[in-house]
Length: 265
Ligand SMILES: [Fe+2]
Ligand SMILES: [Fe+2]
Image (cartoon, rainbow, N blue to C red; front, side):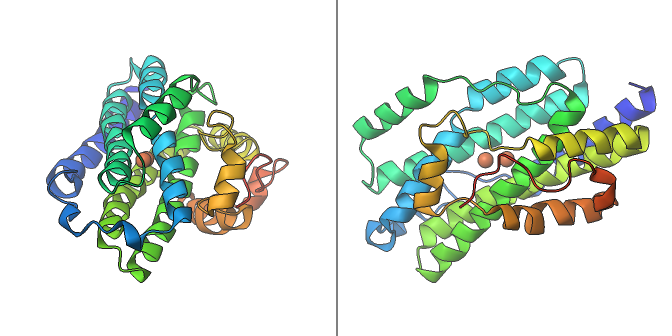
């Protein structure tokens, strides 16, 4: 890695952390209107959706350890990863608090969920920093899209607590996706052909982190309606990303746009 590339990654991290610490960070205890908690305002479908989101966020120990092992010699990326991991941990915590404070899930049910989650280990789906940046941009985009839909549903049902939760968590996911897109811009400047090839390969093999780890992941996503369709994946995540990165769809051939392993929901 050249010194200028390393410096640009560091600057990108610095922009990310400055905005996070001065404008974006929020607090599970003070920023959520817990006093307005009303379990009657949430459907069983939404409860099951939040449980899956919570389980997926709970793999933070694996996300942190695996990511940091790969990025440890790269200051900008490694320090981003530590901040990212603490934000993802906050997401798992706020979902957990919502389900338990509202009485929708008991402590015993959560203990069973933890046991199920930690009986499996998440490992890096791709081996290089650049491939994982491609994966991060896509995965965070999917997560943001799913949470935005949940925020809209919460607003419609006048569930202020859930609306606030999905607002704050969604802002974090959008910031994560933005960081990875900024890194990919730098990667493209450094090696356009290699970066486009990596993006095509990651797209062709894309699946969410919980897919294959959380029992019955796809079935549960479909039954709770909390995933996004393959079509929405292309239209709301992939296409805008390609526009931002100024990559033509034709450049991604032969893999094309459609991922093989994306859940359909
Ligand atoms: Fe998250
Ligand atoms: Fe995220």
